[in-house]
Image 1 (cartoon, rainbow, N blue to C red):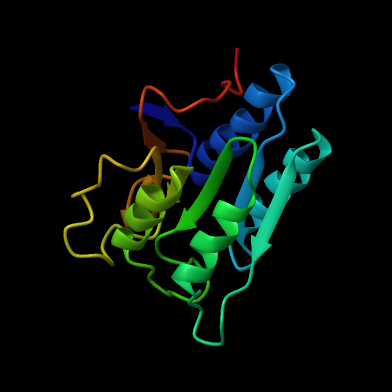
Image 2 (cartoon, rainbow, N blue to C red):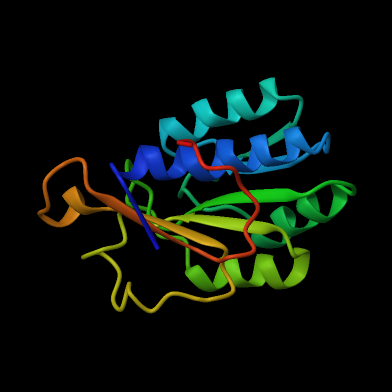
Amino acid sequence: LFYHSGASEGINTFLKGFGFYFFKKNVKAHLFYAKTDHSCVVRCAEDFQSLGHFIHPFDVDANGDFELDDLIKKIKEVGNGPILLNYTWVNNESGIVWPLDWAERIKDQTNCFIHVDAVQSIGKINNWWQLSNKIDAYTFSGHKFGALKGIGWSFVNEDFPFCPLIR
């Protein structure tokens, strides 16, 4: 568990931190994210790519969903290099909910690292606190349920590779 100023800082920590971690090791990494993800994800992807890594934005359909088996196939086709998927549990613009068990299935079938943007889940998902320990990281923001802006936290597994933003 670590605290930060909110979702943007948490997301930046994981996405950029993953990129920096592998940049320092001279290893090319991959980032998958939906084209409908929060704007900070899209901007982080630009930074990720500027480090020489590969980005893989994927489309969603008219209902805001994606084809799970197609995404799993695309992740498997990448081949070499560590892979990070940013998985938006509840979309901040559309309200579309992607089941958390889809993220577990992706993890089981690809072994990629997964960060879940869980910011919108509190108050919108029953039992939102029952998180899968298969997932590598979750980011939350307190102002989404009545806290002051500038309060956030993330859960992260010890073996998730990233460099902290602040040293």
